[in-house]
Image 1 (cartoon, rainbow over the protein chains, first blue to last red):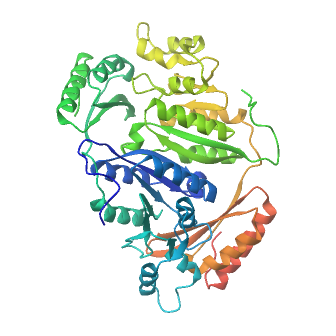
Image 2 (image 1 turned 60 degrees about the horizontal axis):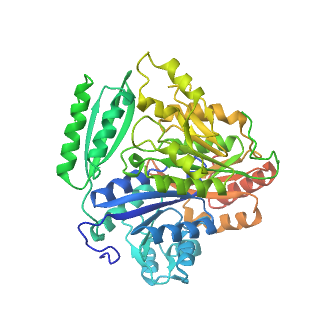
Image 3 (image 1 turned 60 degrees about the vertical axis):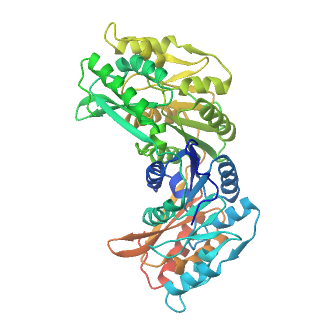
Length: 255
Length: 255
C-alpha cells in the first residue's frame, strides 16, 4: 500500500494523531500500552505524533473525534472497538464520520471464512468484516480479523500484539518527513539550578526542542535533558552546551 | 476546600476530563502512568472520567484543549508542565485560557522559601509560584511546589508520586455523583460465540454498561465481561444473565 495523502516533502513535518477508543481505558481497568509504541514507530518513520485522545465507546464522541483529528493531522490512527461484540462500534462511527454506508467487505469475509472452522463464522464475527464503503483492509497476521483504512484514517485493533502487527505492516507504505533525531543527557543536578542556563540554550537553538525531566532514582535526584530535532548540527551544538552547563554546576553529564 | 461547581445531585452523572501535557508522552519516551490512577480514584468518588487528551508543550494547543474540556465537563484535571524550566508552560496557558493575568502567589512563594536553603530560591524556581490571578493552591506534600485550582480546572504535577499526592488531597473536597459499581465475569469462551447473547443482555439492561474484553493468557483464550452501573439491582441481574450465557456455551464463569 502506498500513501497518497502525505507528499514526500523533505522539509515538511508530517503529523499524526492517535485516537484510543474504549470505556476500559477511561475506567482505569486497562492500561493503554499502544500510545508509546505508536509514538516511537511513527517518530522513527519521520511522522510526529502531535496529539492523542481517549474517548468512550459512544458513537457521537467517536464520530466527533475522528472528524476533528482527521481534518487536522496528516494521519489518524485509531485503536480499539473492532471486535465482534455490541460495544465494538468503531467501524460504524468511521463510516458516519465520512458520510458513507457501512457494508460487508467480500475480501474480509473470505479471510474470516478461511480462519474459522465451518459453521463458526456467525453473525457477530461477520461484524468484523463490515466496514465503511470504500475502505481498504489492514492486514492482521495475528488473528486474521482485519483493520481498515479510510482516507487518512487507519483503524486498528486495541489488543497490543495485534495493533503492533498491523502498524508494523503499515509503516513501509507511509510517507514520513525527515526522521526526528534525539540526544539525551543526564546529570545529578537539581532541575531548578539548570533551568536558567537551559532557557538560554533553548533561545539560542530554536530548531531544537529541549525537554527537561527530573528524576528520583535509587535515592538520588537528577535531571534528564532530551533534545530533539531533524538537523544534527544544531542538535549536537545544543547538546554540547547542555553538557557544559551541567559541568559548570559541578556535575558530570552522562550521555 | 469544597467544590462549588458540581451540585450534590444524587441522580446526575458528574464528569471529568484529563489533559496530559508533555512532549515526552507524545514522543513515547515517557509512558503515562497517571490516567489509570486518576480514572480509578475519580470513579470511586462517583466522578466519571469521560475523556482524556495528550497535547504537546505548545501554548496554543494547551489553551485550546483547556478551554474545550473545561467547558464540556464538570471537572478538568491536568498533569505536567508546572516545573521550573522553560518547557513548563501550563500555568501561563491556563491563565490565557481564562483571560486572566499570571502573577506571583505570595502563599506559594512562602512555601518555596521554607523549602529551599537560603539563596537557592532562584528565578527559575520562583516560576513555580507564578500562577493565574484568582487561582488557589493545591498542596504538594512530596516536593512542596504547589499545583493550583482555577475554576473547575485542577492543575497537577506530571511526576506520578506528586500527582497522586495532590489528587488524594483534592478528592475529599470534590462532589461526586453516585459511585459507579462494577461486576467482572470471565470464562474460557471465544468472544465471537458470546457476542450474540451479550448484545441481547445489553439491550435488556440499558442502565448497565457491558464491556467485552478478550484475553490470551498462559496459552488459553477467554473473555472478561465487565458490567458497570450505579444501581446494584440491574447490575446483578445482568451479571447473572451473562454467567448463564457462559454456562450455556459449556464454560464455567469465574466472578
